[in-house]
Length: 404
Image (cartoon, rainbow, N blue to C red):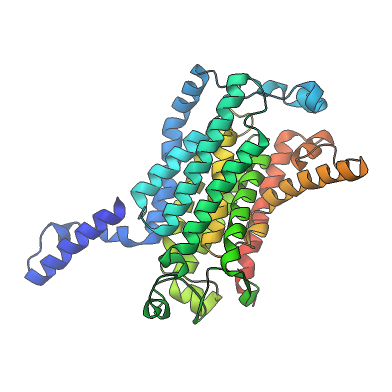
């Protein structure tokens, strides 16, 4: 909406300049602000936050009236953890609809929604959120902590991820595939690293100013793996009040900065030497909307939580962050910036692998945030300390952009 208003104003302003007559366009010259990504990104974050505060309490009351309380695993399944989390029984879940709604509304208002990067991240987030909603609904309906079967959920995650990956691979504005050589040379289509166009299959990392490897067509399953992996990692992290929400904020803000730098020719090509694309800067508006929505949701989700995001929120957030990492061509950097999500997922993999191979557990319980609870950390200590680690990792991820 804001870019459309700017385009309308700009045409009127240019017409007034040509005619020599000053009309309404000169009077409303402040609308020139709407062209700047920085202004619209900040507006998107603020708008998503305000919308969350306005509608948060209403959404919670509606979820309570629908009796969509979060099923808690019993003592036979989680032993001592059931005592620690017993007070959470009945807390409404599916609060991720608030995050989804505010992000999409703020994105529609403040960004150019037909921008390919904004479109693919928004659609992936919405599709993963819908899958999570189905999972949450099944849990609530059957009053069990088990929702959709693991195979069913994984099948649909892979399906969504492959569609997103194929879109990224074949869209000319992103990959340069189908664009003319003149466009690519001019930097108007596809990515470039320094003065050289790079293929969408190139894997980059800030410490190296040349691509590490070019996977070509194999990049599609690699992209899908990132989206599915990130979606599940955020889902595993969402086990304590505000934990996943707070970690999402630092990751989303970091990638918003990365997207803005990658879309700015001088910063990307001349100064940082990171993958540059003419259209990627617009993605920072979407990511700031995600950060603002999470700030607003955290208002209600902080300990003791009044609402949980459920799989509706966690799968959607993970899908959005994974797609954003791919879009900025900083897929490997997600391991650092999203380090908490990686740590949570690895703890589950190591725990399961160790138990199957050695019949011994590495942690008292996985994901790892439950391990720290069981060794005596209070829930709020685990949450805040993980937030601190998340912020430090995000700052480190941004800091290495200019090491080489």
